[in-house]
View 1 (cartoon, rainbow, N blue to C red):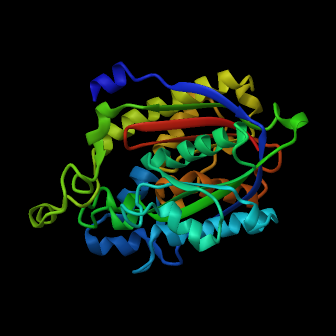
View 2: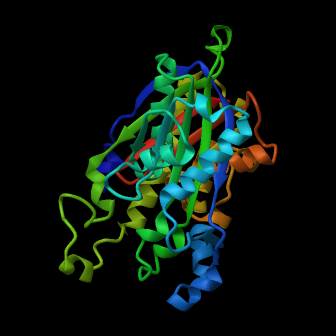
Length: 343
């Protein structure tokens, strides 16, 4: 961990303009799980609030999978846009909790929505939406897409160990989606990702991992007995890394965009922990009303957290057409991504 903090990997920067936000939507399960509900598992409700800022989260009902959440969010974004489903020509889904290893969950969502479009999963854990957003933006800039649906969705309650009282309370289930539409030539330099940054550092791969979830360690009775099918997280190490990488990455991507920090309308960070978000806010010297936070009601929804927060910010009037927003995702991989996005 010391190497990750003292000699961090470098980010890669870019610019992807020529599109606007045409629609936005989100979806969370109906079941609300409060901190008091978790007391029966041995979780201290006040400890949860003090350490994370989370008071409640949503859990998907039995039989509900990531594709269900993603399809509902995608439908909401398309409806909000007023565009025809037939015109959506690309689907990129950020998730690390797919329905199955084969097929991709994006293909399931594509069929559910009735899209005639290529569809792909992007796996970058809690940075999944940032990676998916940048990926879709490249297709639009290249002229390969005119109307791209980007979804972030995770069903964390399926992969977090309910016996891990330090980790189980932190995560919830949810999804958000944005519809990106190419703009005419005269607007191309003004709309889209004025700057973006992506990075990864596999030296921290073991800090947040599901040990028995792929080809390295296939499912076995012995592994299940050791509960290796569930996510394992070194919370303290990830916390220290996240504050540093988010603050540095946001500062640099804003500098690259040419937009003064004080001219950004809203900062939407991955909703992992209130102390991380507050730490980054203080390091950047931002006023509280410039940093969005809703994790107290949803917990950490991984790939779903940024688009879920964006949808709420849009619905409440904190952002709107042509607003300048900074988004920043960070998590397992270790992976991170930030963007200065003019909607």
